[in-house]
Image (tube, rainbow, N blue to C red; front, side, top):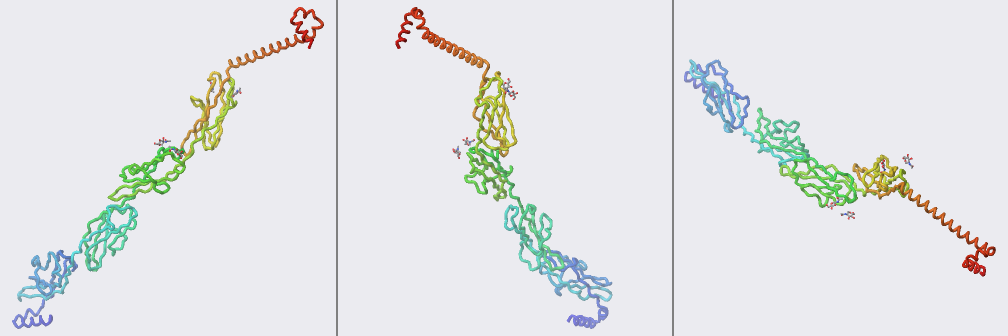
Length: 477
Ligand SMILES: *[C@@H]1O[C@H](CO)[C@@H](O)[C@H](O)[C@H]1NC(C)=O
Ligand SMILES: *[C@@H]1O[C@H](CO)[C@@H](O)[C@H](O)[C@H]1NC(C)=O
Ligand SMILES: *[C@@H]1O[C@H](CO)[C@@H](O)[C@H](O)[C@H]1NC(C)=O
Ligand SMILES: CC(=O)N[C@H]1CO[C@H](CO)[C@@H](O)[C@@H]1O
């Protein structure tokens, strides 16, 4: 038909006597899209250009859509056909012709080869979903970002951006971005977009509204303190455990653990303090603590404090103090040795020798010595009697412990005056004894003399009648 029609037209024109028109038919023009592609999104402007390959002066162009003449929305400006805002109704096959007017009259070209205008829906803006949705995420949690949009009947490619930078190394065909182990570095503002493939031009969606992902570390670990700050306690002492959170954190709860188990009757939840009264060996062990704080409406536990240990020891026994000489009685200027003996072995011991008023001497040992002695020279100028003690300090796991005092030892100085008094007493005693022995001797001697001389010298006895009588009675016996 398309061949027969111009032939008929020609015949008709020839019949009308305008034979010259048929003699030289005008070359057909070329129709093209100014943008270089034929697929447009609804709302975009479209420019078509009709190019006449003619040396003749072109007087006008006409445009056809699906063989129906159409008017440019901007009116016909030369060879340009414009659609201001394209919609799906504009899709179709376009051609154009031109016409010239010369001495031979009006001449019209044949139609250009057709071009096809495709109109696509604008890809809808995607929505970035974070699953699961929280205000805050913790290190190690997993989260999935989903680029969500209504179904598009085309092959799609996805792009995710973090803080305006394309995320590399991911499968472009996936509409999901998964973090299986979040780290604080993953914090940021994310958005996504997609584009349609299989078209000569890149058809890209708008960027989604960005979503913030905030990843936080678990709270910094607290510090567990002992009050007083020792690691060795004496049976019966009191010990306060104190859990201290890093300062600016608002803590909602503290918990204390002994050997990994929560302590019963645990601390005041707001202060983190717990006192162990009258500690015993059973209280020994490894203690830790934790706290909880609120961040972004989630209660987060802290990591555990480092473990603290303490041990409980029996109180130190008093040392034994002995003297040489053992009774502690010495002459003025004499020497006395004090022996201080402890009943247990300790790494480092300091012995202290003291009077009631002051310390005389302290001696440190680095070996496990259990006995120390000092010799002191006692003078009259010192008090005549003094009480001495000894005690010791030992260092156990960094704690200095002072033992109770030994029982007292008394040193008595035997002064000179006492000596002379005793000496005088002794001399007087000896003199009295001598006199008594002398007296006794004299009495006995005189008796012996009487009995031997009586028969020989009766005249002597007559002098004393009493003596004579006694001697006579003796004779009778
Ligand atoms: C331990 O605490 C109790 C109660 O506060 C107190 O009565 C006791 O004296 C304390 N013991 C020691 C060794 O400080
Ligand atoms: C401390 O414990 C010991 C034995 O464990 C007990 O004899 C003593 O009465 C206790 N003291 C106090 C104050 O509870
Ligand atoms: C007492 O000891 C000192 C030195 O320790 C010594 O010189 C002195 O002779 C001693 N005195 C007596 C009476 O033993
Ligand atoms: C045991 C004692 O205290 N001895 C002292 C007595 O006084 C002299 C000095 O007067 C001191 O040197 C002793 O240590």
